[in-house]
Length: 257
Image (cartoon, rainbow, N blue to C red; front, side, top):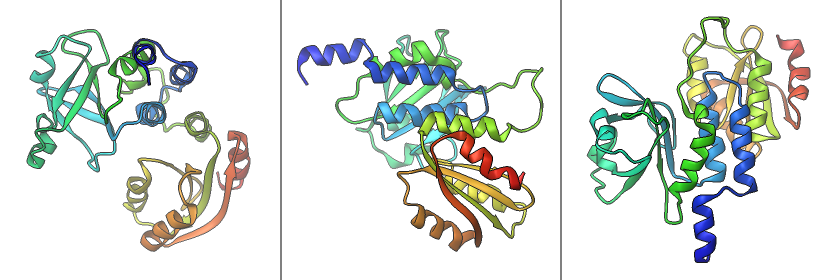
């Protein structure tokens, strides 16, 4: 890439970037918003690990996390107050859960999602050479709400998201995707265990009784995935198909809701 091209990449968004911003701003406000936003951002800005963090009492705590193999990470709140810039680098050892790894030469980019200091929320990314923080900052300027923690309005129903909302949201993020409807003999912990197994790439929706539908990308080897899940959870697979529209999924699950 030439110098002019690099400069353009740092200060402007190409058509794909503009389309990403448009999709991010149109995502429904649900508790999975930031999970979806992280996955969508990764398709445009290749990064190894990513997390959205919100300000707590004495630390920033992740509410969405991707690629760490951890449920949560914490960053000392004082660290954010040291920097006034919209983005900056921190050593990996400044992340509490990674201190024992001792990788002093490994760095992460931190982006302030809000303008206040210290910020209400931050985006954390690790990436290789060729990563342009200016591009990420430009995306955040236009679609910051997608990387903020979800707060349910008092006027909203306290129940769970409707399946149609979840399916539409997943389609917006991934396009055509695979579906598997299955039943399983479950105890109270089984759905959560299955969800943890697929959380980084898929969605699990409860249907009628002990029946569920699993949504996952076409890029995932469905035979390998279902073999792995069946080995752990003894699935009774009812139906498998790919969906190129949300309506196809809604039509298929009518018998199970």
